Length: 300
Image (cartoon, rainbow, N blue to C red; front, side, top):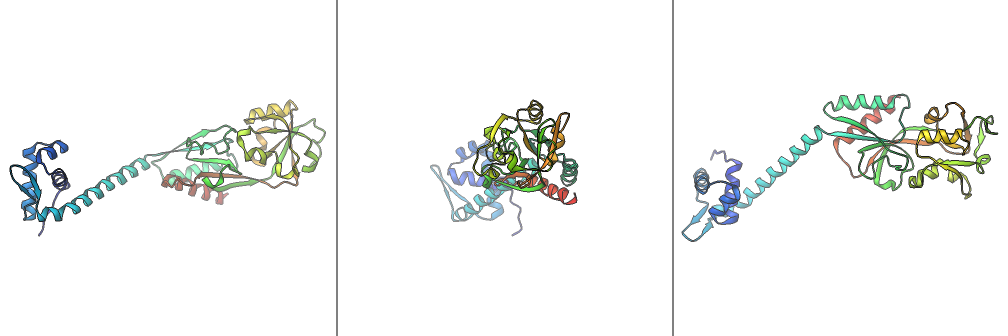
């Protein structure tokens, strides 16, 4: 039996079968009742069997109609699913990826290198860079304002995120050039425990501790000279003599301007700069950006 039944025919049939009433089914489908009846008669003709028994008072499914109904409903549901999948794919193709960062990832042009690889793989997608203050150590991932982010480890709630390492860099000490330790290169961290330190905001959580090197202080709390929430504030606080601060080697040029020097420090592990994303976010666009980051990092 060669035949080509249209989705519309199945939709009309399912509506009548579910309502068991031609007028109500026609209203539900926004079509006229004569048009609906005509379409059902054509479907019955194609199938070679009546689907409904109609009399003055009621409409009932025939054995053929009863057999067809579950298949019709399944096909319609599958088609609904197919339409949703296409809509998602179209939206994803046209998507914008928001990239969060609190510090520019400079680092030998890693950002342009990732961008060019990502754009080659997804010319249709666009990237938007978003600057996130140091108060949010997740770079906008936690509140969903960014899709991926360049951040420093450790992250709060690390189980919520996945990441790839972009750079591992020693933590240097930045201090005013007239500080008594300014010529003491390299400096032992044990010689710094009584110094006032510049600290990230409390909301930075474990990251604040990382930049205070809390784990290298043998349980002695850090002396906080001032809180800083950005590079400019850090530089101003250093020049004002409010404290010293640990910075990643790649960020040292941002603060070692006039009046500030950086020294290597013994006795603390390096810092880890990563590209992170939410563990439950499996969008292809994010996978593409992560892949581009891995390739760019390897190439470096």
